[in-house]
Length: 459
Image (spheres, rainbow, N blue to C red):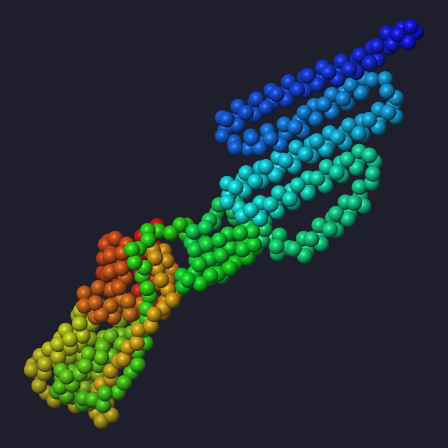
């Protein structure tokens, strides 16, 4: 019975630590439950979608944390010796850190998957980010456990630092592209379908955005691949999503002119009239429209070969001025233009019949133009694509679609206005382009005026 007496005398040594353990465990469990309730109300009020991830990743580890902390407090008021207390404390704190690591890693992986799904990150990027964060957290908590047990961590930190430096050096482009790709995807600054333009000149619609590079479809249907780290270091203009699509895309063309001798020439106005009345349209085109295209860099636009020759070779300033004032582009056909030229010269001859003869060697030599239409690799489906192509095409393409279209269509309109009106349903912009007076611009100036009108419309 002596052992019963001794046990009764020492029951406080057992009851007090047990009571502290039970009391704090109940308190910790109550605080845990209250904390989850507060978080649930806050998540419902704010609409935070990460609440379920938080609960799933911390519900189990938080029970172990409550139990471990209660055991630590109970042990502190126990009669265990200092050596036993120190060993038990190290063990319990190690378990505490491991439980905390499990909660932190689970929470990090869950949040990464949640926000990666919302940002439409590729699965490979999501998996890589989850693994990197998990390894970093695990190494951090293991170092804390080693420190608790007195194991030197400086050599391990040095080795890890060297390994990290070597990894960064070897995979600097890959890691740079990964970071840049994650930033681009999560920030939402660039999305698939956006039209972007880099300061280096690359431009097009974004067709793919992954952790290594970004793919663009250029206006000529080619594919441009840009590494993410280069994209992050470049100035990028994002024009956003496509505008209203045209019913039929606009296909750009240009032309090539070959010049042929006709062996026809004139030394005076009567001979000039005789050839003009019978010459084919290709001759009229060469000495009027083609003449203007060759001198497109001059403003206002020069007149035509006939006006220049009459004034320079015949010295007839009056007729030269009348021919020069003729608006070549107001005539829907070359036949109508020919009749007007003949009419002006015949009227002038009837009023001033004085013979005017060109000096030998200064006769007017008639040439003809043979045109070949060349398709270009550019197609525009909306106004944004259209204005970007306008910056790229040659002056010959502008001349073909603006000036030659009046003759080809016999409507007195240009290809651009007709396409914008018929396929985009924008008669106002079409009319503004049609009203541009080509005589007031060089082809370069006309290009700028067109771009300005369309960009104003886009905005």
